Image (cartoon, rainbow, N blue to C red):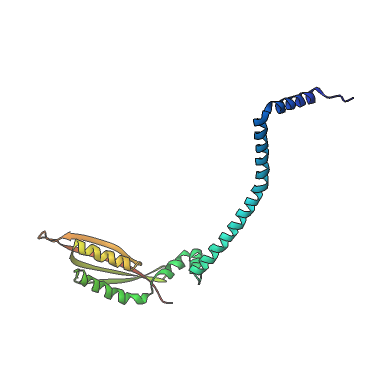
Length: 190
């Protein structure tokens, strides 16, 4: 003869009551819940493993893509030393004569009258680069001046507009008296 504890008997009675009160709909729901728990236990580890494989494949593809985009590793050097990357991105100092000729040619084409030009050269970034400061007065109407400056700044990424002052001519006409200051940064050949 077995002697049961009153607590164990109460739990068994409650479990028997719950099972008997489920009915057919309850049994179907409990079965579906148990199946869902089994599927989750079986599928989740596989998904985690699959995600890890996809992440490693993606990292390898990104590394290969960077190698194709930058075969000499210039961007990696630039990330380690941003100043070196900046200097490498600048055009060589050999472009200065071509730039000055282009500046004058484009001014003539855009009806920008330049009377005289002043040049100043300043070493920058520990003498690894040079700043060519070019200043000049110009006589032109505003639309031509703006389109001329926009074209120059677009075509020469290392060019900066440092100074621009505009004065209307005394007679009140369309023409402006402008003073323009430009800086061209170039890499010094070493």
